[in-house]
Image (tube, rainbow, N blue to C red; front, top):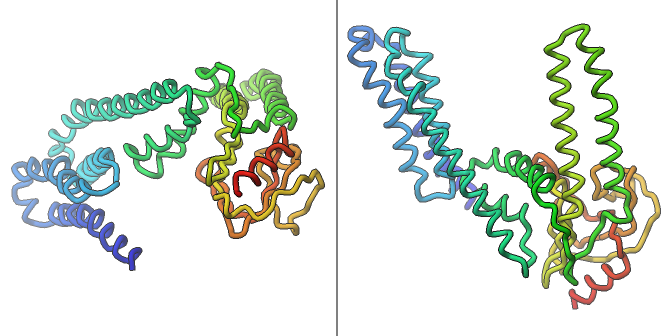
Length: 337
């Protein structure tokens, strides 16, 4: 019932602007528009760029939908106008595209940067709490950005933050547990970076003989990938596993995470034994079997592993590495009591 009601409301919120756009398209194709296209074009342009976005704003203003989504509606109106209006009637569209759209985009970008910077500064002031920057960043961006953009945007910001801004040594609280010191994960990531650095020059020269533009595109992409891997590797050191009074927060840098209620933890086994797909165990590691595990957590009901790019994977058994497995197991079991 709740899902049906939500669907109906979203149908109205997004259906009304789409219906209005369709109406304008049909009107431009009609004989009424052709009779006096020059005079009517201004009204059509104002409807596309102002009226429809304003109606959309009224429909979403009391919802959790970010107000910044008005900009994509404006851009959609601009694209529709450039498609349906004759070229000699696009004067006002061109004015909007040249002067107003950049101002709007800069304003939105400045607002997002301001909110992200505010989250970073707030994170730095919380010296005596377990506030996690990546979690705070996702929460902040979810309030101001469209849902499909949140995960890739926050990931890119976090890669830069953990890779090049956050250099201070992370001190663990008694309810936090590291997993990077003895697993070899960090070493594997840095080997990957070295391989990228070694291969980039010969591949560039080889590809340049065929196409110089393609060579530079691949080189820039490789350098960017190296920066990302570096940020991923450093995030392993900065985002420890955390046990709260009612939740087990499993983190694998900014690449994977799972939030398990403690009352859902059925059993924690100390085990380094290898396993197969038939065992139904999900590996909490990005590089798969290259990384070791020493703990298997089993849950009463199905839980969700959140990975890169918003990928989700269900599990009831999870294999992971913790630097102090026995201490971790004992702490979780005592906290559950």
